[in-house]
Image (cartoon, rainbow, N blue to C red; front, side, top):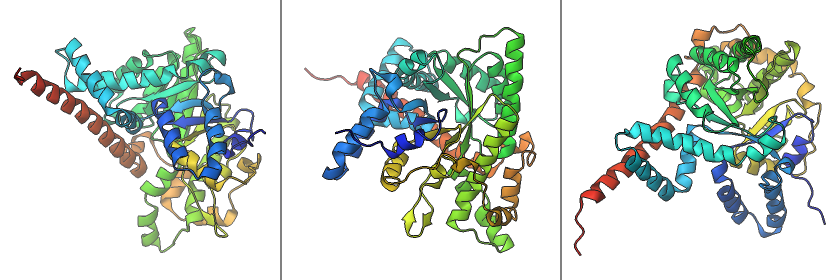
Length: 408
């Protein structure tokens, strides 16, 4: 008896060109699946196990659900924590081979190795789809989000580790210029740390100009594509809604706050279509909610069903979709439905939303100081610091051991 399709698979069926991506290192997928199944009630385990098998199929890549992967420094750090003993020894071995390398150098080697190993697991999808799918996004160091020259250098080094790497560049003022440069060289990009329409518009235009430059210079674009990430819940949670709400005396409900990021995403999708831009929107940082009539909904998923969109999903979000959308049939036209007029009117009373919804609401120099950008860059930088500290501790321990005389 065939197991019915999972909610993730039913969502994928709403549009021929939509894509579900895995939002974590591929190196942790098996351990996530095993832990999730172990925590699942007996009566559900068999069905869930079949779903997980269909999400990633190493020997039949074109039959699997996942069409790509997004990673970032926190997710790469999670891959290290998934097998710390292995990566500790790996760092020590690299130091033996490269005695003059600094802690930072070894960390950078490790980071690229994690990206490389993850990308290799999606080469089957990449090659068999004719380079349409199977990209893995590897991000430049978030601590350098305002350093154009350093980001260019790092991007080229990351791109060199595998043929299916898509470079994740922050949509800061400097990052937008890096995206244009990489596009002109035929290198795939994923604009990250992006939350608002002015960023999406700036990236879309930079990509379009980069493509024109590449074509003029005869650059091969057969292995190129562009996605623009909207970090939905981070826009809702890390910005000025709460502060401004207290100032103007207007409170937003959970549903209205969800609508804010959904409204921006719907506008971005239509902006790319109407402008015939070669980029595709990607929605990340999705959360559960709101609660409607006593039932938890997944509006970040449901309200844009049917769109030509990439949905990148970490394991914890997939688990929630499986639970809360078990009996939901997604509407393939949901993405076309307008935001309720009364909700949009209320949101437009907030400067934080007005600037985000208007493609000209902010200038590129303001991208770097947008509260969501600053907060996310800070959290990503902390994860990178932790990963680098892990390397430092591993090398320090190895150095101490090498100095200790063990009695026979």
